[in-house]
Amino acid sequence: MKLDRMRVNMFDLLLCITNAGDLISEEVANHHQQVAYLAFRIGERLGLQMQQKKDLLLAGLIHDIGAFALDERLALIENEPLSVHDHGHRGALLIKDFKPLARVAEVIRYHHVPWEHGKGRTVNGNEVSYLSHIIHLADRIVVSINHQQNVLVQVERIMREILAKKGSVYVPEAVDAVIDMSTHDYIWLDVTHQSLLHILSGLLAFDTMDLEIDEVIELTQIFAKIIDLRSPFTANHSVGVAKTAERLAQLMGFSETECKMMLIAGYLHDLGKLVISKDILHKQGNIDNEERIVIRSHTYYTYRLLENIKGFETINKWASFHHEKLNGQGYPFRLPGDSIPLGSRIMAVADVFTAITEDRPYRAGMPLEKALAVLDSMVTDGSLCPLVVAALKAHARDINEARKTAQRARVDDELTA
Ligand SMILES: [Fe+2]
Ligand SMILES: [Fe+2]
Ligand SMILES: [Fe+2]
Image (tube, rainbow, N blue to C red):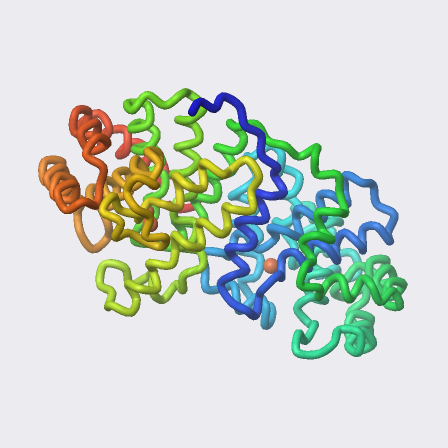
């Protein structure tokens, strides 16, 4: 199989990280999609340009991306903690260098700044985007909806609440726009609709949002940061796996595009860890049997999340099957060895190799010789593919250096420093 070109829709990609974040708890289910939708509708009422409405929708979709790795997440839903700007900043920092999202970064940076009768146009001398204020309002409205009750009977109360804060917390025109919309039942029913996603994707012509493969690499590298920030003991694991897997793919004769796809799959292989409770991930290295079983579900979620991305069929298999075993005893699909693609076998080796050689706060990485012996024993017990392990052993020093360099670069990064 030779693939030399792929295009991926940015909306699909953003949705997958958003959905991963929203799977953490039922309380926040669909939160990002709801804010995206409502912000778009407010923008529409205000007569904003298509470009701005599109920015609102994308900003809504990822506005709390800087909080995915943190315990702040639930606190944000319940009330507004004091350090509330931190996650906006962190979110902006994560995406600002990715060109297609540079404007969106500025929108999410200050999405909790109160209007204060116009003082909220700036914060500490920095300009606050007008769109940030719309996200703020949409976010607070969505949070105030009681999901146990029909939304329509709540509209009156919600209107009273935002009216009370018109000018002091929220931009007056935006509040007026929402009041105008309050009699449009479909807007409120859309916000709380189970299939909001279909409604959202219908709002914009997303065919103009296709990314080239190098842009997909850039964006998924950002996702890898978010995934790794969630597990403090493995703060640069995904880049190490990605680099190792890419090298192995080169050695196994994959095309240039396939090697790039392998890098992407490596960045995303542990995406499902965003769904695993932080309490468990923080204990890694010293976990009991029940916790081990819970962690096992991460590859299932990686699979289900990536499944929604058109053009990612192969990448999904390479990423999600990394705990499947040649002897058929792996998880979550218990695939027989002959159904495990070579790319997935490469990912399995890259994952084990990186996991045992990387340094973690509670232990130093294994010396190379010892690590190769572990891989050998895993070939013998039918876990890993002999061909891939042989390729790694033939270039072990070189691959190990590439892994270390990639992981070191991540440690120096402004977010993990
Ligand atoms: Fe927020
Ligand atoms: Fe894993
Ligand atoms: Fe992993």
